[in-house]
Image (tube, rainbow, N blue to C red; front, side, top):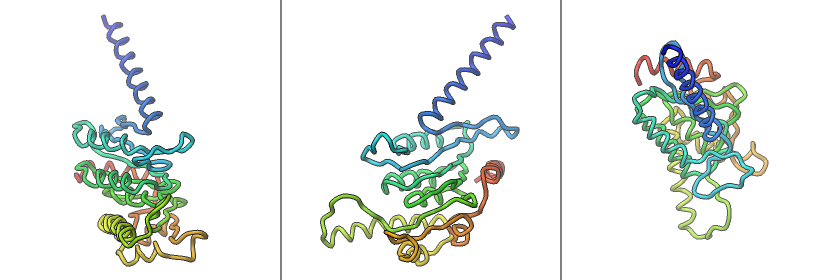
Length: 235
């Protein structure tokens, strides 16, 4: 009888590990729950290009917002998950999709911490600042630039007004969730002496902290420690 129970427990553990591996492979997500504090943390990765309403080609690394949004809703409704760690290494992508992910993260009642690794460019900036606390590794980069659109557009005043509305939504969100002022953010966006074929600014590690966009320079150790502290102390 004891032997059968042990076999059942082994089978259950193997099934859980298999399910965890499948989630990492398919969605880049996993729930961490083996720590002495017994705090369940959901690990969310934003990598490659944030994919919106149009499918990107099969050779591109993408984060699909239709995968992320339901997962965030499930996290909010879960009694087991107590915090969310967001790892970012993204070149940006679809503005509407990126803003949707950022708004969902910002509205979670669970404590959240973000960590910028290789980079968090363009609309990735809004996702990085949407959490309760943010980190960037010393070599991490953030590219701040105005809204761009691919393909054909109608060159009329209404189009440029629409661009401005989108830009105002982005700058408004970023400034409401970090310490940078709107005038300074817009100045970084319109800088002409940094990018060779575009306007904008590249911020590396400590520079992003100095500008008030990211809270602190650090790695996974500091980010995980901060999240555990937020969970223990309450959001």
